[in-house]
Length: 324
Image 1 (cartoon, one colour):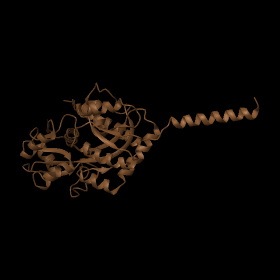
Image 2 (cartoon, helix red, strand yellow):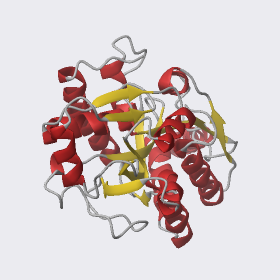
Image 3 (cartoon, helix red, strand yellow):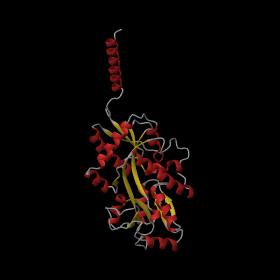
């Protein structure tokens, strides 16, 4: 075989391999992306997920549809994503409670960190600290003083054991050295009914959720729980301003995928999320929900989950908190 013919055959082989490699790496996305929300429709997680899905559909040029798969405090939907194909077409929109699942459920079928691919941080949500107007307190300091003078008589509500509302009250109890009673409910409707009736004296919850009751005078707001004042209630101090910074708590939302997702898809999704969050309209819509945009990298996702798992895991263990 001549040297020229051999060279031509080698070149043809190389071009053939390059063509095969190109065929094995098709463009993404080419089909609908499912964004799993592991909670029922209508809650903050679902509403913010739909806002994100709408923006991602435009950024990616492909439909992104929210799929609610609720059950077992978010475990059912999260587990389905952890076991999905890592092709970028099944994603999980997770709230901050994702970080504490392993502490509350020892037999969790997935690891909240290693069982997923971190993609992007999306939003943060500080909470607001409210009391029923019948309580003779106007500030958080007066609440602490009242609780110290009436040990075991003040009750705070939550939507369940280990929820953000529960942990916020637990860490306030510890930080202020007060004896307050936790009363868990199943669902937010029953909580608000008893809180508005004065059967429960206090609660921590999403600012936008409680704001209508505050404005009508049905609840009294004492402080916000994040490190900064809320633009929705800029007149309210933070717990840090009241020397109760140990009781700070802030919820967040993140985007995750199944383990083993290709880096190129992860980076494409991260860039798309950050582009959505950078639009003024997204910031306005999030603000109406009591949330703020939280753009970031996949590494920031891991930092959030690991950090909250360590912090709240310690509170859960020391408080002997068990899931219902």
